[in-house]
Length: 371
Ligand SMILES: Nc1ncnc2c1ncn2[C@@H]1O[C@H](COP(=O)(O)OP(=O)(O)OP(=O)(O)O)[C@@H](O)[C@H]1O
Ligand SMILES: [Mg+2]
Image (tube, rainbow, N blue to C red; front, side):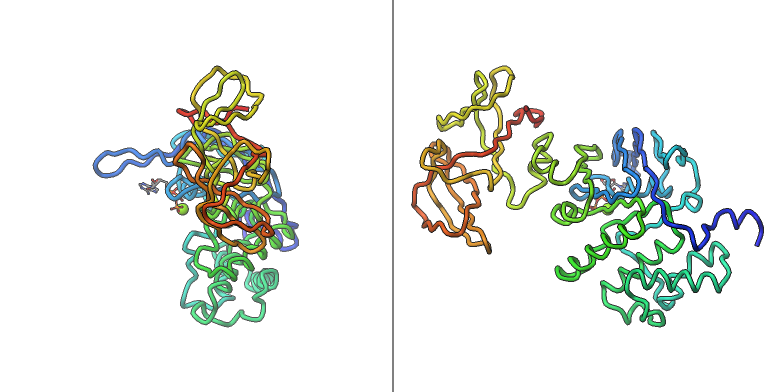
């Protein structure tokens, strides 16, 4: 083996070590045949800490895959830079970046066995066959498919195929693992199982991992941090619970949470929140008087005899441990959802009073959240 090749291949005893991934003002535009420009990723800056699993989250078409393609080098950014630790990799060819990627439609080679699929990237790197075998077996065991090595992809379940794709991405011992909707083809139960598996593998290997999904619950449950993106623009990054509890704007508040946050129009006057039906809630927000939008998460609406938010029950849904009340706010022809303990029994037509334990206030035009 020549020197050049040896340098490219991490030794099989290498301990995985994640790098810090820094994206600086990344921008990517696409121009279609008619000359129409789509800004897929717009001035996107973020730091992804070494060894963490970060969920990249946003609606379809918001630029998630494009961001991953730029990190792995398949798309060249129009502007901005990509750093792995202090190394600028913006112009480094994909095969020299040390990336493992599982694509949105994780294609395995159908004519190859599991073993051949996993070993394929190593053959490209001209790793000696014996060593490649050892490494493939090690990875297969890590993802719990060690006993399926001689099967072809069509003899595997969806979840097993997914794990082969993950093993194939890991076999080069990458510095960064990119997973683009790796669970999209799985049924609900397998999805849950596989996402826990991904979490375990990521923890065991310590590879910096970016996990793309449009499923907010999935992202919230396995990520150390989440990045919420919309229309190519980063909205917020943080610990999942922090982003949920302290959204920076209306988009993030609405995107996270199921059932969705209740949005109610009202007025901010002298630091007090006036709902349009005349109810008043203190806010402590120091902003000029203006029309605003209030956000109340369903679990923040608490039943209370002194509550200032009056409503009539429209529908009662039992959702396991809790009950969801769908109510019409008095004075506003507007429905809100409240999650209450299941011991309360209500029927349509009942009058209820709520207190809102936490109220978000948003600028009506920009969606910015006032604090
Ligand atoms: N090769 C391309 N040529 C032209 N436009 C593209 C190309 N790739 C992506 N786009 C556009 O860029 C935007 C972002 O696409 P991208 O695939 O990054 O979205 P996404 O967030 O991954 O969506 P999804 O959740 O549906 O996979 C979309 O408007 C898309 O149509
Ligand atoms: Mg995509």
